[in-house]
Image 1 (tube, helix red, strand yellow):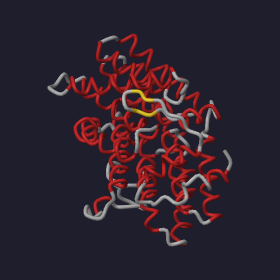
Image 2 (cartoon, rainbow, N blue to C red):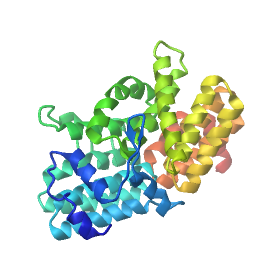
Image 3 (cartoon, rainbow, N blue to C red):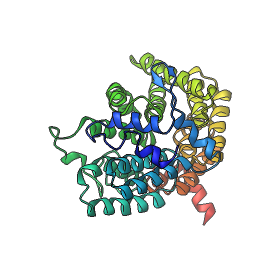
Image 4 (cartoon, one colour):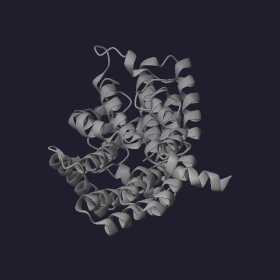
Length: 353
């Protein structure tokens, strides 16, 4: 497909009021194919990502950014905005340096504002603020309030369902990284059908589902009344991930091992849990998913080892998670791990001095 085909593929005439129709046309123009698995269309757009770049960075996101610039050149603001938004999304979930991506996005937002694209900027603002939160530039990491937007000041009567769905989805990611698993299991899980309906059941929603599933499996450890529901959701998402991998999509391999580790914890299989956590970290690091490697190393493996009284193993895992989060440029996560485990990690600091 070339840019001319994209321009003449019917995408440019779609309204921002119908983002799902836009995305459907966008993927169709990109030569996407779909196959159904438990209600999820599997789009080749997701597998293109690592086929083009098996090690570190998503060239799909670079392609989408090029569509953004092309859209501006030909006056197609809609294509430009959605292309950039999707590229930005891939950069968030795939661990590109938050310093670099936020600086670039800040420039883009200023450019769009100068062109009076305020309404189109609302969609980008949700993702931009999510990145700023993870970077540490928000008073409360779980509230989308800061430089890009203020969710507490939004008028419920005027906010679009699409924008509302994005806020819910990205807060699911923030909850998983911030260890706010109960909120994901109790609140976000109930709203995921709405998010899925608005955003569309494609590779974008799948990442959100995986992070919510991790939270659900964490909450299933309590053996409470809803633990069966949480476990079942985790099983459904795990089956979907494995099906995607079997069909050639390598983007979720490290997260597949992370889910396997969570199930092993629930079964009391210490050896398998540690093995799967470590495989998730190793593969995530190799793929450049340093954000997920940090998640698997800290909140998951490190804290699990602490529960099992393996202090040496937990110490190493937590320290390694800090290094991953430094690479991701997430000052919030670096300080979060340090402050949460301050007493435990203090001997290391003394040794370093």
